[in-house]
Length: 85
Image (cartoon, rainbow, N blue to C red; front, side, top):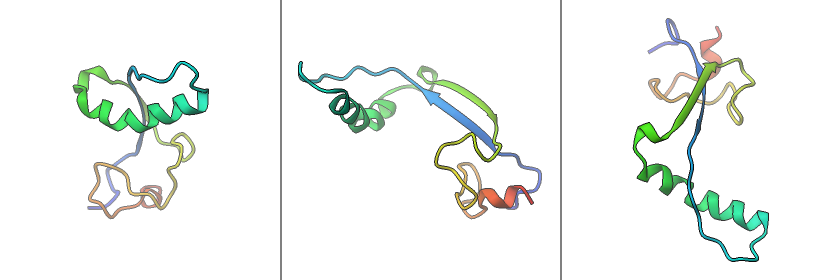
């Protein structure tokens, strides 16, 4: 597979979960609890429970993604930087 005839899409996915924390939990602790359970929560949901927005990837609109990353949905070897050639 090559990057020919393909485009990169940046997607933002959000969903709601409820977590239980101690009454005196700080914001830092609350964030840690949420992060600890987010994958499990997403796994428990059906696809229609996710809010999804997307746009053409422009090199800066996907936090943590750069040219050496391999996008989902490809062949597992073509890197983001290869799509812009």
